Each structure stands twice: as C-alpha cells, then as structure tokens.
Image (cartoon, rainbow, N blue to C red; front, side):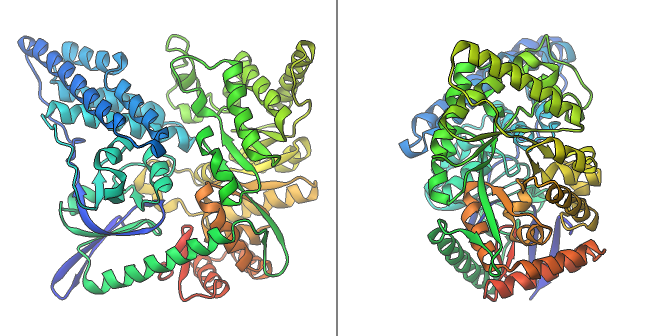
Length: 600
C-alpha cells in the first residue's frame, strides 16, 4: 500500500496518510503541526564566525535545558515516572558528548551550529537505530528529539506551540516533554514521521490512552496546521480534511472500539478458553519496573518477557544489588506467577565505555544479545546472579536472545552453575535451577529448533526479528516495509515447523512479538498451534477477549490453507471474516483493534 493517496470527491481533495499504529483508538480534531526543525540551516562559515557559532550553540543548550526543567516541574504526580524522561532530555541537551561533537564540527569543518548539531545528532541516533532490538533502536528517536530542541532554540523558537483547546499533535518526532508542554488533557491524538511501538512517546500514548500513529512519511508534505484530521490508531492511518460522512463513520467506529475495550477489561480476569474448549495463556511484556502495577489490572497470567536493557543504559554499569532489587520488584509484583527475564540484548557500543567499545560497521548483526553476554562473562555473571537472587522471591525463567546454536545455551548453563555455586558459598538466598529458554528470532535458531527444543526448557518466538531476518528487510527502511507481512506463507511455515518441533519434544513455546497483539495474528497463531501469547499490558485483555470468541478449528483451517500456499491477501480476508463472525459484530478486527472493513 502506498504511503499516501489522493481521492477527488465532490471536487474536494482528501488525503489519506499511512503509517504504523502506535496507540489504539480514534481521534477527530484540529491538527497542531510543530515546525519541522529536521530541515535545518546548512551554511558554511568562515574562521572569524567560529566563536560566535559556538556561543550560539551554548546559549541554545542553556535555553532548551531551562525549558525542559520548567516542563519537568509542571508534570503532575500521577505521571511522575515521565519526569525522569524529561529530566534525562534536560541532561542530554547539555551533554558534553553532544555539545563537544557539534563544537568540533564547527571548528574543523567550518559549518554553522545548526548544521553541526544536525550531523552530531544523526551520528548518535544512528548508533541506537542500528540495533535490531526495537526497544533500543527506538531510543534513537529520543536522541533526534533532543536535536530538534537544540535546532529550534538555535532558530529562536522559544514558544511552546501549546494550545488551550484539544488538538492532534504532529511532529517529525515527539517526546514525553512535548506532551507535557501541551498538557496531556489537551492532546487527543499524536502523529509522527518517525517513532515505533517501543518509543517513549508510544509508551506514554498507550499509558494515557491517546491514539497515536507513527511512520507517516508524507506528513509534512500533505498536512497543514489547523486542518481537521481523523487519526486512526487502529489501522495506522491519518485522514486529512475528512468530509462529514467520514467523520460520522469514524465516530461510530470510535464508539464501537470503546465498547470492545470496555467488554475486554470487564472480563480480563476470565481464563482464555476458546469456544471449542482449547486453553490458552496470555502474559504481559514489561520494559520497566514502573509498569509492574499493570499486571493485576490487565489479567495477565504472568510476565512473558521482561526486557532488562533499560537498567543498563546508564553512565555507569549497574551493580548486582541494584539489579537484584529491580528484578525482585517484578517477581514480587507477579505474586507467584512466572516471570521470564530476557538476558541483555544490547551490543558493546551501548554498554561498554567508549574506549572499550567495539566499532562495528553493523552492530545489529554483530556482537549483540547472547553473543555480547558470552563475550563479556563478567558482565553477564552480574545479571545472572541478580536473576537467581530474584528467583528466591518467586518463579522465574531466563530467556536468551539472538541464539544461533546449542553451544551458546550450554555455555550459559555453565555460567549459571558457577553463579549458583558462588551464591551457595556466600549463603545468599537464590533459586538453584531456573528454567532456561531461548528466543527463536534468527533463521539459524528456527532451522535448529528440534535440537534446541531438546536442549532448552522452553522457547519464545520473537516474530518481529524473525520476520525481518527471514524476509531480508531493514525494519527502518520504509521502501521495503510492504515486505513486513506476517501472513507470508514462508513465515507461517517457519512458525509451524517450530511449534511442531516443540510439541514433539514436550517443550512449551510462546509468541511475544507484536503479532501476538493483533487479533489477526492471534487467530493465525492459534491455528498454527500457539497456546501462549505475550503482549503489552494494554493489549492483554483484548487478546483474552478475542481468544474466548474464537474457535480453534476454524483458525486451524485458515492456517492450513495459508501453509498450502494461499496468498497472504486471501488469508487476511478469511481471518477478517472469521473474526467478524466470532465477534458477532458487523465490524472487523485489525491491528489489535476494531476497524470498519477488511483491507482492500
């Protein structure tokens, strides 16, 4: 589907822009388009202008920092966790690594301050965006947002662009600070050129129940400030200048989705059993300790994936005590339900000090995940000991990312045994033999699944990375985004091979990728033999609600047709029809949410 298209109707133009759904819901309102500071002044300077440009940069840094400080102090108590994010940005806009990098370019390349900032930010952001883990790659957008602030300050932009009336906020990239400047009460929707489902702004949008769409590449070319816009956070679309009939149609869809969410929340505590009696489990994915309170409210049957990276992305490496406290808080919040901790999925360029970091041309395919952990066993042991100590508070499992062979699993078991011995000698409470599993996210792991299933205690399908590697596409390249098709027959065949290998060896397998949060994905995965799903807490009630409406036999029939080579478009249409029938609604399900019609 193209990124945008134009329809002439009654001589009036209507533009539909396509992106990715970041936060569910539908918003209808006025567009507030923040200036595109991504397009900055690029001017060569003379030697005589160097000092003035450096002074301008320092002034801009101080101005942006002061503005962020004021924003942080105004954040209400119930959103206190986001104050830390704003304060982090406040530090970044005056970080010596950012400022010195830009100053060096001003001095040596003889370019203006805005050009120097643009190059410096692009370089730093690229380090994060090169990471295959979406949680880490999205941190690049936070860096780019800092660049926008500095460029805005350099251009003399001192206004907040805030409005006293509700609006749909649009920008090249947004941050929590942008939302707080406007006041969350006045932001009814968000749309960005950049940003993915794990970005800070996406997490905040879901927390505040604000519909959001990202990856809208044509936003600044087609949208105009003050226009009426319909933002569809269900299908990832933005309608610019809708007519009255469209506004009525989307209002009805908004009401239908609100009813769907209400029903799902009210039944969140019920078990996920299909209409024909097949049991399923739905767990929650967590990124930070602050999200643990969601477990009791969303009906999750445990934590299917706790991403541990954020505790390590600091100026100094965390110690064992800090990690033990963090991990124990998650186990305690789970109240006896299992917690799956994923080992570090970062590269050397993100964890080690600059003088130790490995300079790799492509970190996403380099020393990351279990490769990094085993290359730096002293760092890995710190985390393993913290896992084991947290396991004294309740059931835990350890999950290894980016596995490509049995040797990596066996080396990890040796490190776990050594850590257990150390803790026993110290008399420190710990769990002695936690289940050890792997992420199946590389083609190598998928092909070796029979052997890996025999070696491991459980497996977890990372559908995002597995699909990208299988289809040989770059997650950040919009030109090949059409190949990101989880209903591709090749991808479905790989999943079926994995589920069969696990079933034959009696090992449980779950899916913790975005596909699990899409009812189309829920249905096809159920038909392929998946019984355990894990997703963001916001989507857990909806997944359970959908599973209770489905019947396994219908999903199995659709899956069998897809495995036999049915086109993904045909599979998608059959899924829509099945879901519409099972949900007993004239609406269809798409991207975790209700939409009005199946895709064309």
